[in-house]
Length: 359
Ligand SMILES: [Fe+2]
Image (tube, rainbow, N blue to C red; front, side, top):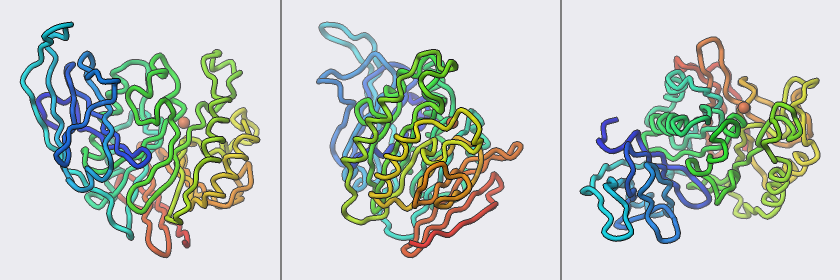
């Protein structure tokens, strides 16, 4: 993409009933999003950020859905001073946006566990082409040792959705590891500092959850650097407060499946069964149609209470990201009025396995 001042395409993330647009520039400056006649900035207690090169800007979904386009407005920082700060001339870049307004034949594509194989994942994710309505990027896309690592993932998501298709992004356990893991929420969508949140987009609604690491906090491998036990319990309380009362179609997104955390039943990765049983009870109460996951590097359709289930659950778990040699497998979900089609698809855009869920 050639926009003189941008590092890559922006990304339009769905959080709650808003969009959060992530913009990464090549240099430090003030970043603004203009849509439907309004200017939006990153929330920062009245001060506009100018000493960094990225911003996460919230705006109401209605504004972008109505405009079907937005502009990134950038003023590069010359010098921020106590008096008479200096910025360069305004530069702009315009992007088309595709709101999810249909109520049938909704096409969602999930990628997870890309682990830096960006090109192969992008090949696979072309499956629905221009007809894609929503992307789900479900964790472990890169690593988080440096700020550049974050920008690499921004670039990948930008290339995937071109700033045009909305994206739901969830944190994976590898995104919670490394020197800059503590700054994940500076770069990626969240609700305050929480990487779990509900969402609504068009006629779809759901919840993004975050198991954190796949091992208990006391595991020697984690070196005492994590405190996910209370974080998971906060999510139980959050789930108990959720109500999807309108009966619209709903689903959940979580990098690690809480009800099928591991298929190696003898391994250390079966943790927090009591907490995950509480999550499961709430997901069942909310009436989710399915849970979209990654993490296992396998494409497995796990029916309710099947061979992989470590806890009883009423909804299918779709663990949909696999590596078969050099080929990356992702998950295509099509929501019809009477059914949901789940297809695992490869880099040659072929369906390798398909399941139908009756609604
Ligand atoms: Fe993972």
